[in-house]
Each structure stands twice: as structure tokens, then as C-alpha cells.
Length: 236
Image (cartoon, rainbow, N blue to C red; front, top):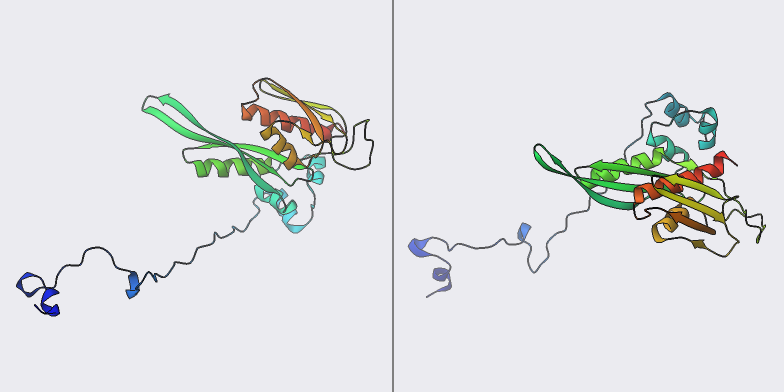
């Protein structure tokens, strides 16, 4: 039987071909790759009077906003004043609730935003989708960014560098109480894993910490840390 006859099926029809061949007639695995689509950055359009003042350059620092007692309602204000701010997911979890329609499942996320040079904010978000929960927490973290006053409050060091807190501070969040004590230069951060990372985002390099309460609950722990670091600016 000839090759042409073998390629035809019964009744003279072409034999069916199973499976998908390479698109565009490509052979030997030379399939063209689709170019990766980069996410487009959204252009910030200020919606509040404070946002318009920041966008025009009338207000150029976060400290000036705090001194005037103004309320920040747009995350774009913080991004404009602190372009080197970076966010990091601290903790994620699942919230399950029993309703009249059955069991409801939602995701929660805690995100910290800091520039490792005296600014830190922590936010929490909840949603039915993990991605949206993280986006909500990130936006809330930007709105909660606060300046932190750093210095050298350790009697063992007494240098003029900003590597620790200027004095002992204590903060509380829920059942968790955290105390940050100034430490000499070169000691490092004496703290747990997630607490240590939050202090690094704030810009601290040397400090002793003590924690009491249910510290595995990151919601309360992060609030206690933020309460501690806010006192360095308000009391200093």
C-alpha cells in the first residue's frame, strides 16, 4: 500500500489527527512564547485637599502633616512623601464563621510598611480573596505610617548615632505588652523572628525587647510594637 493510501481513512477520507500540534506550524518544539505583560502603575489622582497640597509641593514632609493635625485619607500621600517605602506581609490567616446560609470563610492579612530609616506602619485587611485582603492591608499600612525618633539611649554606649531608641518605651495591644530598651551599638536586635523583622523595617539596629501576653497573636503584637514606636516621636 502506498504512503498516500495509508494517510487516508476509510471511504477515501483523510485520517483524523489526534492531539494539538504546535501553533503557527512550528516544529521541533519551536513554540513562540507569549511576552509577559507587566502590571501598569496607577497614576495617583488626589481626591482630598491634603492630597492636592502634597501633589503641588505645598506640604513636603509627613512631620508637617502631623504638626498641623491633619488626617491622611489617601495612601498616595504617603507614597508621594516616602517613595522608598516598601511593604511586607507579616501574617495571613483564615476566618471561619457560621451563618444562617452556612459556613462563611474569609482571609485576613497583616502587612507592614517601612523604609528601614525611621518610618513604620502596620495595617490589617479582610476579604473573601487573599489577594484583595493583602491589598486592603497594604493600603491601611500606608495610612498608619508614623515617624519614629531614633537615637542612642544606652548608658553603655552614649554615641551620637541613631541606631536604637532614645529611651525605654512600652506599648500595649490587646493582651500583649512589649517593652523596647535601648542597647549599645553592635549588640543587634534581641527579639523574636516576626518582632525582629518589624523593628528592622522601622530602622532599629540595636535593642532589647521583652514581651508578655499571647505573642503568637500577630494582630495584638503588631499593635503593641506600633504603640511603642509612636511614643518615641510623641514623647521625644
